[in-house]
Length: 214
Ligand SMILES: Nc1ncnc2c1ncn2[C@@H]1O[C@H](COP(=O)(O)OP(=O)(O)OP(=O)(O)O)[C@@H](O)[C@H]1O
Image (cartoon, rainbow, N blue to C red; front, side, top):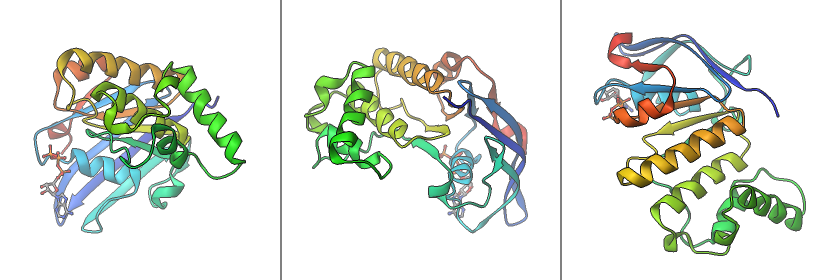
């Protein structure tokens, strides 16, 4: 499995003549960089810049390097960056397995594709959830399936946007460990945006406050 890395080199995002932030960061495979900062400091903007969804109102200078390749100006679909949000965003009219099949890159027979999905679910002992309707899953199960969906798209980096904030404290720490473990096992660099100090501490990596990166 490839050892992925995400590198932000002099990444400067501005709105008009106001610099929102200026960042240098290197995230190695399995590491989690936590990004904090008050409302309006640019956390979502940073995630948009990395995933390719930055509004043209912003200017973006510097480089976003993924596995040594400059992706700063690539189309979102060519970046191979996986995003996980606060809400699991599973399609309610599809089974869990169909949700996961939907995320799998094209290619292979239906049978091969189903087998890939089932193998992924077995690897994390969630195979019994495959036939379920997403709305019948618990919050923690939905979050785990949402992560599996991201991983099945074969990302080279994982971006987490407040991914645990809809979960209660107990569940939150278990799902968090699940996500970090999966990131390590898949050799993915992780950038996590959070307001929660416990999330940041559990990540066990560097913490950036965007307010200090003006
Ligand atoms: N499409 C846009 N057009 C113009 N300004 C925008 C746009 N999106 C965000 N902004 C502005 O850019 C700044 C950073 O916004 P951003 O959403 O990245 O902050 P944030 O740190 O994620 O905030 P929150 O914690 O509230 O989600 C804010 O001043 C916001 O008003």
